[in-house]
Length: 153
Image (cartoon, rainbow, N blue to C red):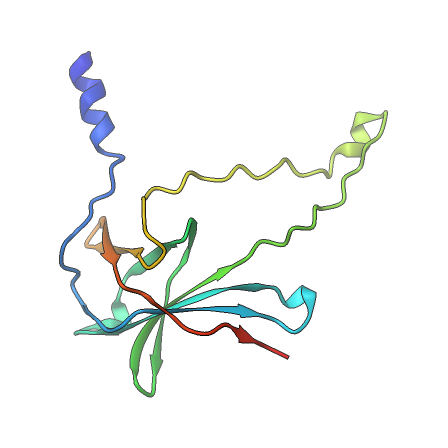
């Protein structure tokens, strides 16, 4: 019985690779904020990517400064860029109905439970997840340069 538990514990570990199947340029991040409160704010992470078959690149998610978001590949004038836009959550709480008749509270949403961040990273590091065949693999990006914040009007 002990063997079964020890084997199942390994499957949840993240498979970090030392070399991704693509070349990366200098990664940058830039804080941004919209001109109106409803526009929001966040952090944009951009990583220039080179290699073969980038249109079919299976980048999945980026893990950066305690947040997780999906990665999008964009073909720009200067080449392919992997972008991850970490939007700050709106701090406003949704309206809740509190009533003596519990049936009138049906539309209330339960609080979101935050998933534990799976990596210990410095402020200038992120982890990219990507599919290699059917296996999800992870690669640590280091020395991310921070640009001046961008404020939209």
